[in-house]
Image 1: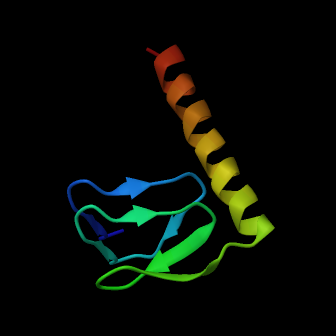
Image 2: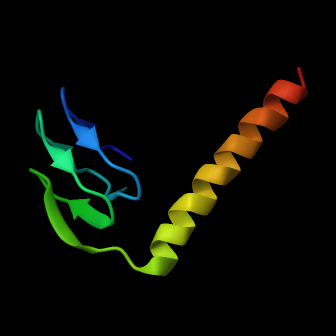
Image 3: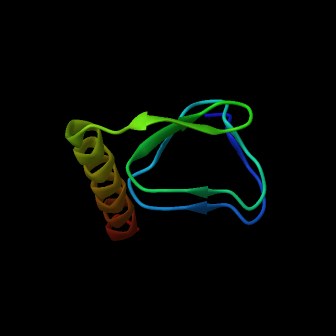
Length: 72
């Protein structure tokens, strides 16, 4: 949602990026944290519920993709 991710950024699994965040070139966002700001900064660790929510959201998108492919 309006975030800008520049060249060479590495984003590990289970990362939540706030809307409007600017991630400068060659930054690494490590797993398990919320990141926000302009420029980006690590805000706080994610809760277990937030990580589960991210994983469930990813699974939903995989299923929706497959449903779309199957409907063609």
